[in-house]
Length: 300
Ligand code: DON
Image 1 (cartoon, helix red, strand yellow):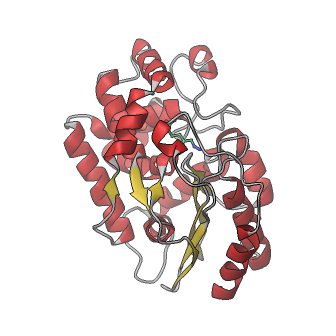
Image 2 (tube, protein in one colour):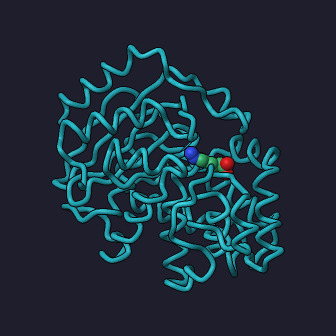
């Protein structure tokens, strides 16, 4: 496994077509696109790292997986009254379907749906307490107390989050927010601004599989369901393409990170900041594709 990921990191390091870094969040526009990291936490407890696997990056929408687990822990299946479980076929920040479908977002991974999951785990707490719960969950999953929120990234997003404010107000107009849009957005932007390295993210992803010494934070049924949503919705309107090329449940973020799960085998994190046209890591997707082909880990 180590030889394979060293080879993947070496192959991709020569690539010049890396895609563009996200620039709608000013702080993310400063990130050097010329970076690539990969980490694999295997079910037997071993850990493999290559490239910039120890460099922290902004996990952005990968946080929606942890937020979903937390919201389900809070309200269980009642969550599905407020958010759907279908791919949207639209970009991550689209408003289009929200009007037609009367304020019920298609799934918990598009921004509108993630605002509902944030609203759910936030209910009855202050943003500070709710983010404390979230960080406790992520740190327990990764077994790493050093994981933290990057305040500069959170502020940078909050100052420019016009679309997300529009989505939050729209959700509120349909009665699908329990907290005020400002409180939800403040919490959501801090949630997205968690910094993690590939090593930390691969370790955190272990909560979605059974493995030797892995933290048991979810029931088996909930693991299966979150994996199903990652497969169908984790890459937005690029979810079909990711399933076709990689064949693993995955969740991307505009920071260029991807968490993928090889059920029963491994939790995999890759990071490269340049994005493809869907807003998902370009080289990260390619790395996952090579890895799945060479290991035969596709679920299909
Ligand atoms: O809400 C946003 O726009 C960002 N905080 C997260 C979006 C994101 O990561 C989309 N993923 N590829």
